[in-house]
Image (cartoon, rainbow, N blue to C red):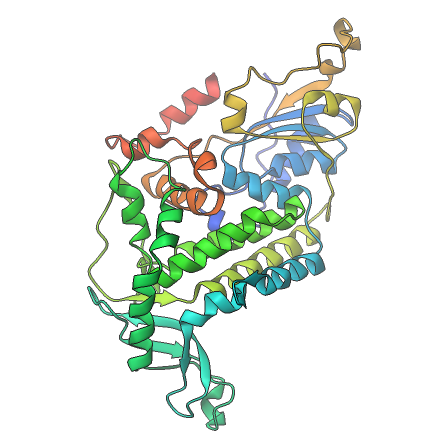
Length: 416
């Protein structure tokens, strides 16, 4: 057994996206670097079994190693694209603007999403974009609205958000969306895997959102699937959408505290009966992209700086040197027999075989599936990536009876 590193090394936490802070936190980057330096040399192959965003792969590539990385879930695969190939921030801004201006019927995507959140200033009567509506418990229409009015004559308050009661136009707009958003709801419902058709859980999750918010998510999910972009840019936009899911739901309680999403035996646990805040989904999407931009900037500032990994599809590309990273999802990898080589590749004996360069298996523990983590992963993966990606989650634990949350199961996985 390899000797452990010195306990005097103080763990240093690297950059992290807010949505992964509890679901899949990164390992201490300095400990990863020390392990790789101590156990391997340049050109060796490092295997990561339970990736949480390719952090070990990043540390290995920075030190001229090659990596075979199996990502735990589809959401961490999105982060892996950013960590291994950080996008140019100018390209990221251009992608957001292109998405916002993409035609949508007689309008554009951004305008179509913001139109149900358009209102008038209570002071000057100018059009404004509502940042959030405040709802009373069990109410069918919102009670108050918050917005900024840049053109209002009251300059002393124009830079401050103001909260006023909704008017008749706001109520009519909310009621109109309730009647017209059924198609969006059905399309989103089809993205959730369930044990049998008609299972109530997908509908219960969609009930956390108002019809206009569901329509906004349907528009964004459709455009992110149909548009062709570089993988890191696509991953950044999808992670921005993940950021918007919980704050725009009924779990966003007044005065601004997010309630945990909990699912027990395939049923959404009832939320606390109190007022909640319906935030503008497009503004949340832009806020999520700002978090991603900040994350990319921090990646470039940490030791090693920005890297551009050469991502391949199999072990052959890794050994040949045409790529230095192979990324696989755990769901796809589980249906394979493992890393394979082409049948027409000559096999050399002993140390001459390139596969003998595999020197280290360095991994984190598997993701600990608490009730909150699994519920959030199910919601986010289904809404952003679709049914196929969500089917790779441990759905038996989600729809089946509750079990004791023990770390012993994780230890058993590592021993296999």
